[in-house]
Image (cartoon, rainbow, N blue to C red; front, side, top):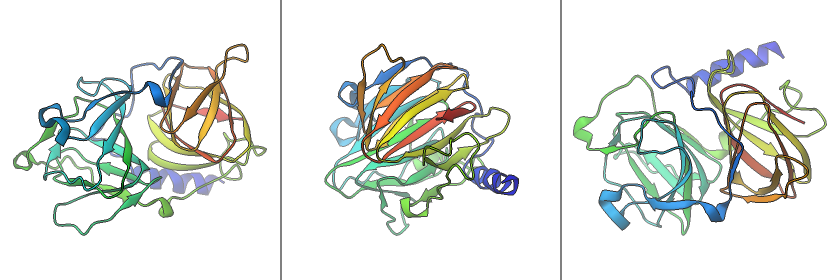
Length: 276
């Protein structure tokens, strides 16, 4: 198993670069944002309704701090070529999205796919389904749109990973997943050593009932597909978290969850967590 973990560490290194922060100094708290409580606005207020809609999950993308937010694109949307001042990472939740150079052939990423857009890299973003939604994760801000005349190379490289190219591992490969759970995980970015910031996808099988214990100062989870019931204590009421809901957990907090259907979570943490 050691050889497998070393290989995974090398793969994870491809999905991250030291140009962006490797830690998150803002400690997470026990909180839940259900699908119907997401606060929506415009991703680029200067363009109004010509801009995609943006929904807040945590943090403030207009400030210099980590943030997670949803973006909704209308069918046929295609942005002008542009750059961003910071690197962002995205997961497709609904529809088909394309993110690449202006001259690149369209690579439509379906729900469950992942992409990384480096700061300073010129690109366009397009959508090609009736409903299109993605979750975006930034480690610093503010999130700004700038002209390609200001393009620069920050050393990172863009990545597009179709859902079908994800590598899923189970409890036979991962120590922090109980072998009784049938849970699978796919590494996305970051280092899994020395409690550095990292992100993974966690796939819960239909009928799952168990716990996720956070062992780090920072833990945030977004429901990418499916849905689950969630509670921090058995005495409190259960909350239904359908895609694209969110929950955060403070250090050593336990989330009691169950999923009737297969559910995929995007988990961003500043250290380890356990699935039981």
